[in-house]
Length: 585
Image (tube, rainbow, N blue to C red; front, side, top):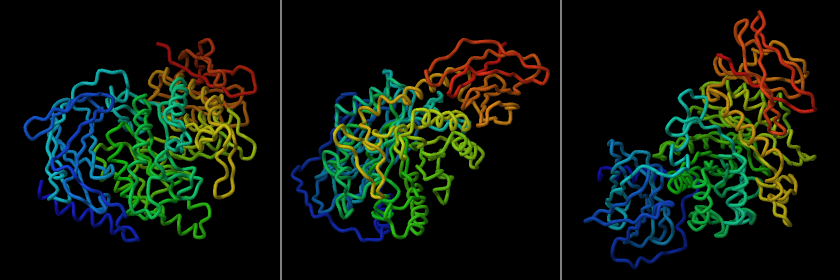
């Protein structure tokens, strides 16, 4: 272990020197009055006690559930956040090591959070850059992991990962996972009150079938730095000089993030909006991300490095230079994230168009997130999705920001816009998933106090979040997820537009198939579609799905003609339709 100390000193020096501005010492000082080491273990929602055996600490938890170790320093630091680098090295029952970063939580206290899917005894020992601090360096213990016995799928099956086909998502145990996200960009602000507002909105989304929440970790879009609209109950995540992080901000954020995970949502943590990087500098942004990984990496999260990664600040006078700087420097930050995260959570970044195009090295991404356009009609949504499907390196493709329902551009977008964007992009990206957005929720409009204008002057609408959560599109996308997951081998679907041999409409119809067993066609408007699926005489059980009402119509039989084509005409009505086909035995 001691051989790691020179490495730690180099890591700390490199991290701090990479910023353009030298780190200043924080003005606060902390007194240490405890002569003895204090260690407390908190188990997320487990309530299990810690037991001291000899000089080691023993704690019991369950698979995939977080354990928390609290360490108290025996020294006084003038600037603990910047002076101390602390990690705990865990060794699981299979002998695999995990170097887990610790985080400073104020005063003379640091914490380490750990989780594992492996049952058995997990031993740990801490390594601190300040080797003479007996409260932080060389502390050892054991975490005993038993099998999880609850019903939360994230704990039961494990945090989501990329499926073996590199096109879809799966739980840790390989069970298919369809990504249905909701957009809560500013959900960690005090304008979405904890606990009453958060619990109300989460219950609404859970009932409709959402399973991912995209949420920004304090460095927000559509506002300058330190805008009061971005504060939570404890203020802002950093001091105004970006010298030291505010642990109290993240204590308040913990309550929301823990709750979402315990309700079965995957928190998709967006570290910062892209244009904050030039303000913090690369070194500080790496510190920001190390802190997030230490705080939340043991939870079943997804990492989204930045929002609109390469988009400069709205009022920037050097937009082209900022865009290139952000592309280069965010690539470095993502490499640092991958090097730092011992749990290897899935990584992406939110783009102005595509995540791949936002980085100098797209191979750092686990999946390609798109911003497919608030003003883009269905045909443009599907074209971007197919572009993503056909681009190397192969990875899942989803739209992380499409057409926000009720977004005033300037006329508020209807449910049809959000729904059609879902189907158009999702079908042409192989049914991996999609993120919905409702104007009023993402920026947390209040009943009597709308969010207001962005620095660029745009005002996206005044719908309160309490009304926005009941907009029709969210229920329609929930029904869409249920339909998709009911299809045999839905997680094996591939877009196959070439199988459409005839379509009566003027817009773009879409088709995806899972081998020769299952097919799905999306019609943006009523009409007749002909698909070449298999040999002559093959029979299919077919059904039309109404994506507006969320209803599946009665099944019927389709038989392929001599050319292997099946033909069907949708019901009437001024709306889109979905056709599903399952090959009969």
